[in-house]
Image (cartoon, rainbow, N blue to C red; front, side, top):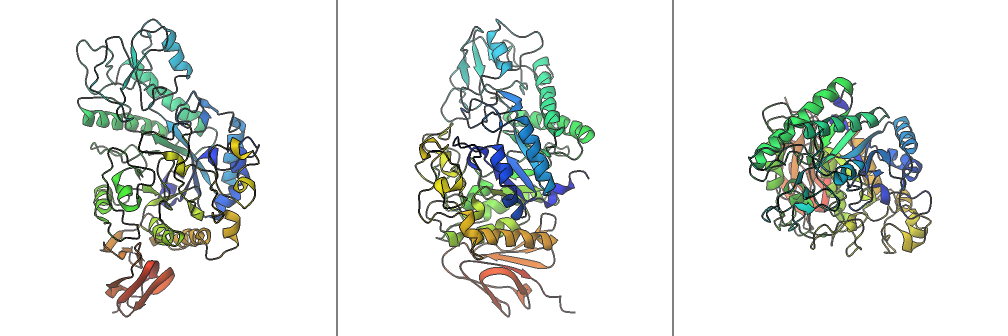
Length: 539
């Protein structure tokens, strides 16, 4: 079987605490997902990616893991995960888990053991410790915060963190070592080697229980360096190359997917795909209207998929060419949104604007990923309360994209029977909020459009991830050819757009709204879109 299945996959991301609550405690769980697998299957998706569901104190929504081998009790048990995998498989759906490789929670037993020690472990430290006072120049990924945290226990000194103080960085070595800085292990020292083997152990544990692979959080942050970050990334990629060789030998059907694009170091890529990360420019230049706020590395720009029509596809296309140009068959995953980023329907964006965006995402040639709720056009909700580290920066709040799934018009939108005050996050209180039940009954709904687009993608392989994509017009309307036989046009702005395309003479509209062709003249209404089958070329 191998991993070729990823080329044709359509993913669905489940943020488990917000998807479906089966036991009435206000927090989603695995049993709730099992109860709604038929809905996921009805979309035509074949792979579900779960955000972390391992044991955790949930300082950072589960990205602070205290036990990699145990499902968090609020979600259920290991047996529930195995049942979910089996039930999903019966519907033709694979399950990917989110693996936090670069750090743990301070509550993890590994950290607690080293915290109680009086000095370095003879087996090699799993974490990065120093006894000399750290300088203040090096800030952490969390903007403006020190990378080194004072030890809260018997062990003297400071530990290196990733992001929050409660997330101590695992020790995978440093790109450069220096005299007098004994905490800079090389990648071949015992501590880093222990952690690489531990990664394999964790992966093997869950792969043996039927999961299909892992999305790796902060995949390229493992090897550290404040002087030579490019070498650190290259060494991290090499580390993952070793993990990939182990997977190929012991779990040849399993995939690993990074958070972000893999740095190229000359060898074959270690990961099975690249991911056009939503908080980075390749995705944000298309969709980000800054509804969640602005992170320090994000330059303000008009997104292409916005009604004003002032955006550009240039940044996205340059990034696409940098990845697919050297490797035209490389799978590239791209999401509607995710747990760190505002939804497609954010700010002033309206339901009628979603059709063009969804048509692009499901026909461009990526491996598409639907974020739960985007299939019905759930709104990104502003001013949500801080929950489990959602406000990761004073100007950026991730809670607006993490609100409960809207199933029906019952209490709590069908998400939970709990008192509203006990919900993980508030439900959208707009009386006109979209729900699965209402859109099931409306053949013109976003839900049915998503199903039709996925079905069209399945029935027309050229619209999938394997065929070439050729840009015919990079502006408004955005027009591109897939393979030899299909052209897709999308107009994300509110004003109509026009284009002369000889290729469209005699073309058939397979799916669309407001897109018409007369001879070679293409007209696309505001927010219109169309997928065309080309006629046979003239002899």
